[in-house]
Amino acid sequence: MALIVQKYGGSSVGSVDKIKKIADKIKGYRDAGDQVVVVVSAMGGETDRLTELAGELSGKPVAREMDVLLSTGEQVTIALLSMALQHIGCQARSFTGWQVPIVSDDFHSRARIEEIEGNNLRAALDGGQVAVVAGFQGITSDGSISTLGRGGSDTTAVALAAALKADECQIYTDVDGVYTTDPRVVPNARRLEKITFEEMLEMASLGSKVLQIRAVEFAGKYGVPLRVLSTFEEGPGTLITLEEYVEEPIISGIAFTKDESQLTVLGVPDRPGIAYAVLGPIGEANIEVDMILQNVSGDSSSDYTLTDFTFTVHKRDYEAAKEMLEKVAPEIGARDVSGVPDVCKVSLVGVGMRSHANVAARMFKVLADENVNIRMISTTEIKISIVVENKYLELAVRALHDEFDLDEEPKKVESELTPTEEQ
Image (cartoon, rainbow, N blue to C red):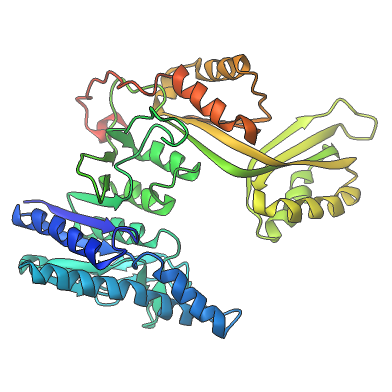
């Protein structure tokens, strides 16, 4: 017998027929002897519908009341799924966030989980019931309903798995696992059997939309084995785990983001505080900065050596950020501001980079052979990211996928050490 936490998103519970199919799947686990906790999102499109209703009443609804409103979407789903399970002879009981309870802080619409009291769920499981829990929501210490923000149902599932010490947390989506890259760009992209939390966190932050970053962080922190599976197809999915192999593949995957823009402040005096002078107003405007590059310019005609300061922002923030920089430039003595509104970021991710020194050289060579110009480079221990023009995105991803043989199953030797010993 295993204790399993399963999460089904909005596309998986988008209709009564889909809910019935999920109920059959859950009953199969229960009939096999497993204890099952199910976390569900609102039915597809329901959250948008509720948001539109609020917008008809107020241009800026109070966050607390929006949480009360949006939490009803998941409440509908847990009731319907519990009914579907009961109808096919599987005992089930629904739980809202406050009935678990999932205690959060009071930052409405983006609350963070502080504590989960699992006694109510354990009692249901011990009584032979499937516990069906509303994702995305909790309750504050003063009794107000809260919501957890984007990816909240994933986070709920992982947090419950950690609190209950579940054997596995299964995230059901419309894809059958994590791939080496987007199959829509590289048709021969390969589903990964296993990936580390570290790699998955990088890929999630770099544009892979299979899992939300918060859920991966939570799972890694508490050592919860995560498995990504398809709601609609049978298969083993992808396991995200602490375990590593002795012989890791050099590269596990290629992530990319399309909606990026690049901005450069030219001829900036290279003096203490200049980075804050450039980026301070950007941060105060709540514009998120991604990659940053500062290099020394050949022009040193002023009292200070001059530098060019380059960074990337989301494309939607490009015009606002450029306008701010054009106002700041004269104040800090910069020569000019330039920008490229349409760039993309392509990243190689893999823990195997730690023991292979020539990954960057191979990456740059294959891109040079394809005549792809690299505008920016950023590296970490397990990641190399580059910025290129949007028109080169698919060419770059396909060339790199071929160069590192990501369509082939790597030869692996299982480690005999435990994750703790390896670390």
